[in-house]
Structures are given as C-alpha cells and as structure tokens.
Image 1 (cartoon, one colour):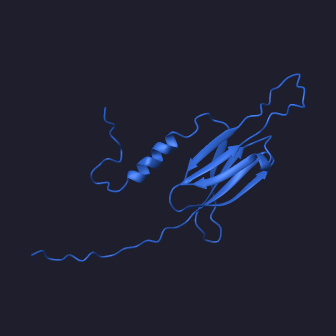
Image 2 (cartoon, helix red, strand yellow; image 1 turned 30 degrees about the vertical axis):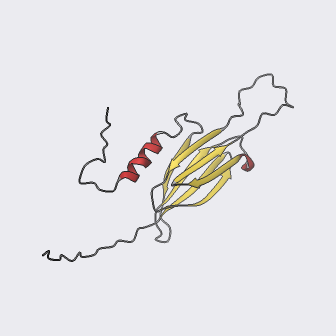
Image 3 (tube, rainbow, N blue to C red; image 1 turned 90 degrees about the vertical axis):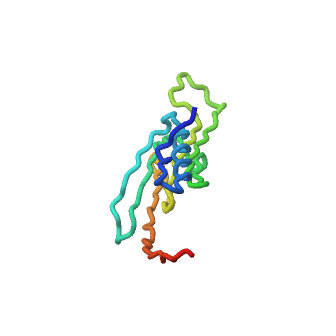
Length: 142
C-alpha cells in the first residue's frame, strides 16, 4: 500500500527533507515524561524571536542531564541511578531515565540552557533569513 504525503503535490518541489523531519518528529518520545512547555518570549532590542523550552526535571542534577544538538534535533537526556544504600519504606519517586527530542527548523539556534528549581530552560533564537529577490534572465532557444 503506497502512502500519499501532504507534500507530494507536484507544485511543491524539494520538500523531501521537511517530510523526513515531520516523520522524525512523529517518531519522537510519546511517553509524556518529562512534561514540558514551549513559549515565545518578547523580542528584545529588535532581535529575532526567542523561544524557550522548559522541562520539569525535578530530582535531576546538572550532571544527570545531557543536551545535544545533532542533525536538526535537540535531544535532552536524563539519567538517574538507583541508590542501593537507601532502604525505602515507600517509593513514590522513581529514579528514571528519559529522552525527549525536539526537531528544530533551519535557522533556529540553541542559545543557552539553565537548570533552576527543578526546571530546565533551553533558549532558542530564530534567526531572520536573508530575503533574496532576483530576476531570472530568459534566453532564446535555437
């Protein structure tokens, strides 16, 4: 059975990479942990738009978190290890690992990451693309 894509319209040329990015985003973690917010921050000093991803990572230290950027994907990983020295009577807070992946569009740059009060905030900057208009010369065929 062949799959018909939204971007398979013959008038949309060269959008194969976008289609692959959409598929990659759909395959991302569907577990829902950790919860996160994405917000748009007000532009400062006429700079481009700033986006902030905030993940609730209570119980994780800086050493247990890893943020990588690879092939247009922002990957946030958390790794906690089980403490064998503790004897729990009740265990409601699990030591768990996670991977959360965000697919970034071209022109989005990761600026900073900050961990405070159990919230990991990652700031992204959307760079304004250069607008290029050019006239194409029409030549005659012989």
